[in-house]
Length: 572
Image: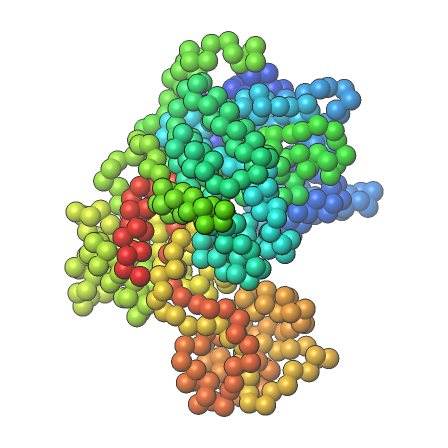
C-alpha cells in the first residue's frame, strides 16, 4: 500500500494532524508533549485568558486541585526558559477539555505552534505564514484575516477607561450603532467616534484597505503598527501562500494579554474560525518571562462532517509539492472640519460594512444567501424590506404552511423560524444572515456580527412594578422575566441582589399575585401594564430589529452580503 493510500484511509482529523506536524517540523519547530492535567492555580491567576468556569477540575492524591487542560499556551509559557534559549520554537498536538454554552464538557483536538523569546517582524511573519500554509493544507479556498491589538489599543487610548471594553466589544461585532451610542454616553469626540467606526467597517485585501486606514487621523505609534501589518502582508504575498489574506479589525482579543498581530482562519463549510492566533506578550509579562511570544492553534474536530467537500479542493501531496517548490530552502535559512471631511471620505470609500470586494474564493457564484426571518408580524415587515430592496420571493406570500422559500434568479433563500431561534440558525451557519430583536441578541449573546438597525419592531425593555412600589434594598429583589440574562446583567450593573423567576408568558401576572416584586419585559405601547395597574420604573434597553450575519458567511459571501446591506439601508 502506498503512503498516499495509507493517508487516505486515515480519519481526516488524524490525516491533517500528521501533515501539519510534518510542516512545522520542516520549519524547525520541535514537538512539545504535555500531560492531561495542569495545576488549577495556573488558570485562576490567568482567568482573563481562560475563563475558569469552563474548566474541569479534580483533586490530586496530594490534595492539590488539578485541571484538565482547557488550553495549551499557558503551559508552554510556563515551561519556557528564556535564560536557556533566545528563541524557542515548539509545536504540539494535544486534546483539550472545555465546556460549551450549554454547560456540556467537550474533548477537542488542538494542533498548533508557539514561538517564544527574542522575536521580531521576521519571526512574526514566519508564524503568520505557517498559519496560512496550515489552512492551505485543509482547503485552497481559505481566508486568513489579520488584525492588530496594539493598533486598536492605540486607537482608543484617549477615550475614557470605562468606555474601552464596550467599544472593543462593539468593534468585534462590527456594530456601528453601538459605537455611536457608546460615544454619546461617554462623551467621545465626533472625530474619534468616526475613526473607530471607519476602522470597524473596513474589510478586504491589504493593498486596498491599509491606504484607507492611513488617511485617518492616527498617532505615530498607530501608524507604525499599520506598517508592521503591511510588512507581514507583503511577506505573505511575496511567498505566494495562496488563499485570501484580508484586513479585519473586528478581530479583537483581551488587551491584558495580547499586544500585536492577531489573525483568524476560515475555510468553506465551517461556520466559525478553525484557526486562531496572535502575539501575546502580555501573557509572558504576567508569567514573568522575558521576551515576546506568538502562536496559533487549529481546532481540527471542526473538520468532521465536511470531509466530502474538503476532498474536492485539497490534495495532501500536491499541497506539499507546491509548498516545497514555491518556498525553496527559505524555511531553513530564515483643523476639525478638515479632519471630519477626511474621515467621511474614508467611510465613503469603505462603503460601510464590508467595504472592499474580496478576491474570488473559488466558491460557485450561484451560491444562495440564506436568510432566517422571525415568524410573525415582525418577520413579515422585514421580508417586505428585502422585497423592496430587490430580493422578492412571491411564494412566501401564499397561504401555506411551507417554511423555506427560494428565488432562484436572485439566489436567495428565506426560511421562517421562531424569533428566539434566529441567532442559533445564524451562529451555526445554517443561515448566512438573519433578522431578530435586540432583546434576543442581548439575552443569548451569539457570536455573530450585528450589522444594521432595521428600525422595525421598535419597543423597549423595561422594569415594571405595581403602582406605588418602593424597592426595599435590605431584601433580595424578586424579578420575573423571560430574559434572565438581561436581568442578571442589568442588576449586576446596579449592584443589586436579585432572585430571577423565569417565566414564559403572562409576565404581568407575577407581581399581581405577589410572586415577584418587579418584572422585566418588552413594552411596546404600555397598554397591558396600565390595564393591570403596573407602572414602568426603569427603562433598560431600546429594542428594534437588527440584521445579523454569520462570521464565516460574511467572509466567503462578502460581496453579496455587502450589496444586500447597501440596498436595505435605502429602505430604512
